[in-house]
Amino acid sequence: MTTLVLYGFNDPHARAIIDELRLQDETFVTVDADWGQVNDHPSSKRDEVALVWCIGSSMPLPVAIANEIAQQGTPVVAIADQSRVDLFDFNSGYIELSFDYPTALELRARIKTVLARSTIQSRPLIIHGDLRIDVNSFEVSLNGRNIELTYKEYELLKLFASNPGRVFRREDILNRIWGDDYFGGTRTVDVHVRRLRSKLDDVSHNVIETMWRVGYRFSAPESRQAPTNGEPRASVSVT
Image 1 (cartoon, rainbow, N blue to C red):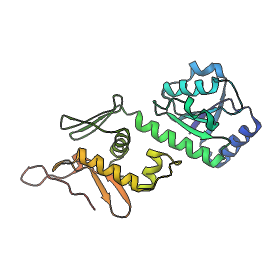
Image 2 (cartoon, rainbow, N blue to C red):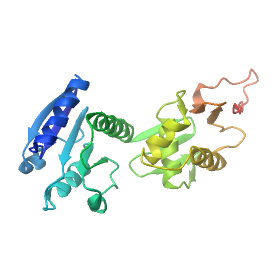
Image 3 (cartoon, one colour):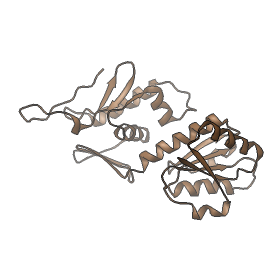
Image 4 (tube, helix red, strand yellow):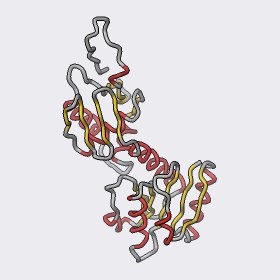
C-alpha cells in the first residue's frame, strides 16, 4: 500500500481528483495533514508520498512545505501553477511537479515516478565489481579511479546499476531521466549513453549493453563468467 499525505487539498476540484485517483488504484490510502504538521512528517518512510496543493494560494507556504518535506527525504508531488516552478528546490531529487489541475491518471503517473526515483536514491552505495556509486556524495569510481560524470550521465548510470539485467527502452529512459515533458527525441539517450560508455568502458569494464532495436541494459561485472585460464574476460556489447 502507498500512503498519500495530503496538504492543502481543500478545493472541491482537488478532492475530486483524489477520489478518482483512489478509484483507479486501490493500493492508495490517503491521510489529510495540516500545514503545521510538516515537522512531524516521518522521514524517508517507505511507500509514502506527500501531495502538496499549491494552486489558488498567494502565500509562499505551500511551496516552502513541499521543499521542506523533500529535504527530509520523503518523495513529494506538488501541484502548482507554472509561474511558480522556479520556487521549488529540485536539488534533493524528491520533488515531482504537476501543473495546474491534473487528471487522476497524470497524478498517478507522477506518484509512481517519484516513488521509483526515491527508491533508487535511498540506496547509499551501489557496488558492482570494481564499480562503486556513492549516492550520498554523487561520486563514481571504477577500479579505484574516480570518474567525472555530468548530472545526466550520473543519473543514467545510477538507473542502470540499480537494475542490473533489466532492459530499459529508450522512451522509458527518456521519461525517467529527462521527464515526460521533454520534447527532444530518443537520440538524446543514445548520445548520453555513448558519452557515459566512453568514460567507463575499457577491455574489462563494458557494463552497458545495447539491445538491438530495444534499448539498453546494465551487465553487472560480477555476473560474468571468467574463462578457464582464470584471466578476466571482457564482455562484448550487443550492437
